[in-house]
Image (cartoon, rainbow over all chains, first blue to last red; front, side, top):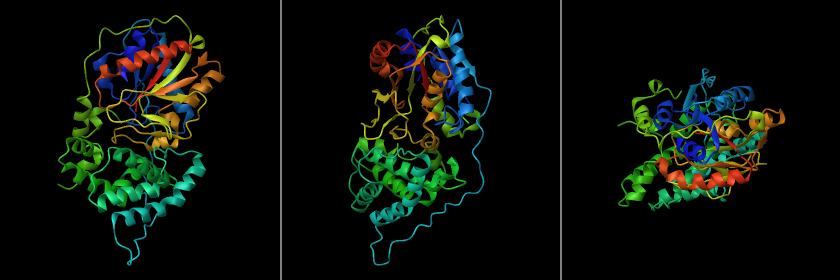
Length: 232
Length: 155
C-alpha cells in the first residue's frame, strides 16, 4: 500500500488512504494515511454501516488539505465489535451412508451438499456472491480436493485458489444464519467441518513434499491463528 | 484490533517483520484544489476482481480492473494471505472497496468526479519496489482518465 502511494505521488497523483498496521506505514513514510484500529480485512471498519464508513473516509480525505507531509493520523474510533453470543452452526452434517466408502471425496461432497440451502439463502439475501474464481461448482471443487487426498496425488499449483473458492462458499453459507459472527464462522470452518480437516491434512502432506514450491505453498494454506491452536 | 499490543506474539512478530525503509524522500503533491474539484480513483490491495477473471497468483505485482459501473456484487477475492477476515468483504464489498460511499460523495457534490475504472492489486509476498513498474504504468492510465487523486485501501 505504501509503495503504491509513493509511486503514484511521485507521478504527480495525490493519494490518501487507510493504514491498518501503523508500524508498517510509519516505517515507509508514505505521503498521507489514516491509521485505523480495525481488524485486518476491514479497512473501512464495519460492513453494511454506511455512516461509519463515511466517517472514516471523511477523515482520510481531510488529509488532502495538509500543506506538508508525510502525514499519518489516527482515527479515534474503534469499530463496533462483532457479537460474541454463543453460536451453534445449525447445519447438522449427515455422515455418508454406511454402504458408501468413507472417502474424503464422499465426505466433502456430502458436506457441501448439506450447505447448499444456506448458500442459496445467502445469495438471495445479499444478491451477490464472492464464489466464482473457478467455473466448476463447489461440489466439483470438493470432489477434486477429496480425490487429491484419497489418491495421494500431488496438488496442482492452483490448489490454494480452489480452497479460497470453497472457503468462500462455506463462509457465505454459514453467515446466512442468525448470530453468525466472523470469529465464530472461522472457528466453525477450521474446527468442525470436513473442509477444515481436509485442508489441514493436505497441508501436512504438502509439507512433506520433495518439491520446494509445494512445501512453500503448504505454509500459505492455514491461518497462523489456527496453527497456533493446534495440539503439538 | 490491529494494535500490536492486542495481538498474540507470533502475529505481532509477523507484522513487525513487514516494516521497511522509505523508498526515497516522501513525494508530495501540494494541495491546491478542493475536494469538489478532484476526480478520484479507488485502488485496493485486497486482491479482488470480477469473478471469472484471472485470479492473482502468489508474488503478483499486476493489477486487475474494477469497472467504474460495477456494483461489486460478483467480485471474488484471490488474495494469497489466509490471515485476515474475509467475511466482512463477503457481506459488503465497501469494507475493502468503498465504491458506494464514493458514489454517494459524488452524488452529494462532495467530490468532483470518479474514474471510469478502479483497480485492485494483491498486497502480499513482494518487496515494495516490485510494484514500481505496474504502478507507474497505471499512473499514465489514471491521468488519461482525468484522475488527480487516489483513495487507497489495504486489507
